[in-house]
Amino acid sequence: VVKIDGKVSVEPGSRVTVKISNLHTGRQRYHGSLIDSQQIKRESGLYWGYKVRIALSLHDALYGEEYDVIIGTSERGKPLSEFQLPLSEKNRILVVFGGLEGLEAAVEADESIGCSAPEQLFEHYVNSVPGQGSRTIRTEEAIPITLSRLRPLICAELS
Image 1 (cartoon, one colour):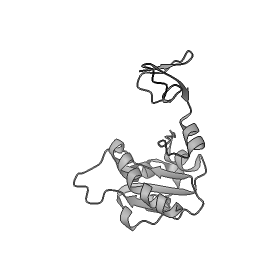
Image 2 (cartoon, rainbow, N blue to C red; image 1 turned 180 degrees about the horizontal axis):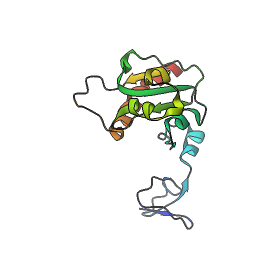
Image 3 (cartoon, one colour; image 1 turned 90 degrees about the horizontal axis):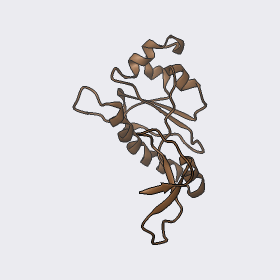
Image 4 (cartoon, one colour; image 1 turned 90 degrees about the vertical axis):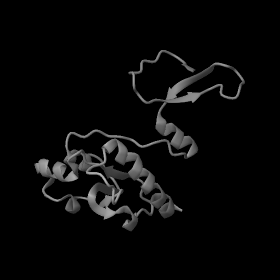
């Protein structure tokens, strides 16, 4: 248990990052404060999870911010094993996951996109679980699978 300094109101189920101030003091009770998760990355260079941004449409997701690389995921994409990440100095990567109906349905539903096929829309259209053996993989399963498979490609490109 960590006692958070100051008055803090957090919604149940929220994910927070806590900086523990007395970790190596030998005390039984820890004290800490809530910090921005990106602060850890800035101070130590450590990876501290991914950021999620909610967009009202696929168009807003793709064009609401500037990204260096945009990757769409689908069981109809190229296997991730054939994928080469063109990074160089790039570090803003957007990975787009479809819902149960896939990115195909999202592209079809968003008239402002201007195309009807996801492979035309995304620079890279990949399948992170080829031969998945089930009709669909839930988004909450696809996120860690895809990110864990992308990480070695990113690290290899940056080293």
